[in-house]
Image (cartoon, rainbow, N blue to C red; front, side, top):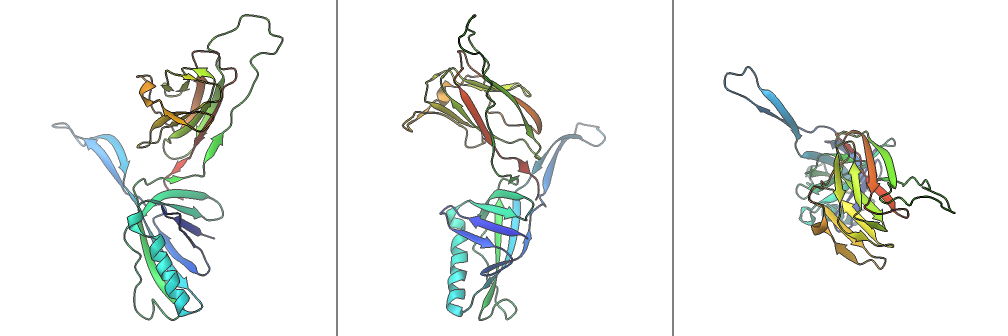
Length: 285
């Protein structure tokens, strides 16, 4: 059974399913997205040289039937639907469920819902409606995945031997079996001097030339358009350390396939813990 929940930027939600008050009659745009194929051509070249393919925005159309027990309730539900799908509020979240998968996508209403007239479209206890949405980012997101740290003691007490500086704290494999590279949200718990996160699969890394104190958390977001690096103190105070990022750093994403992620620092990170969260991206549901 299909179920769609749209939540706007104001927090209002409407649930579309196979029963009243908002019956989901049909949905289009779950998979079909056009792509622009980028090529280049040299003089006297037969054909062309392929460069890349770029997906266009996703368009989703929802056919809805509002069902009510009386006319005042019908009018109230109609007004509420128009309020939820208000394009002036900007992007909301469209959640799709079908019993097998759960996917989400950012979407903005492409106009106020249409309420067609005619006896076949409206009556004393029902009203058909059409809501069109535009998804600037065409990818469907999985529910958020959290990679918990793998804890293995580096040594036991009493300890005898040379104390190693720059000890590697965590190294793990993350498999992205989605359809596209995906950004990550990283939490690095102090203490650590010049903490560094490396995607050894691509050779990219993010390093901050600052000391992360015990009790502090470094939060990194590699989402395009939302890239940020903050140190968060125990009382919740945030300190923007974007200007302290190593110049060779890259806000990397998880490529499709295996990603070997390593966490390290320029000092002992015996007490450090690192969490990483991400969503897998899909072309269709």
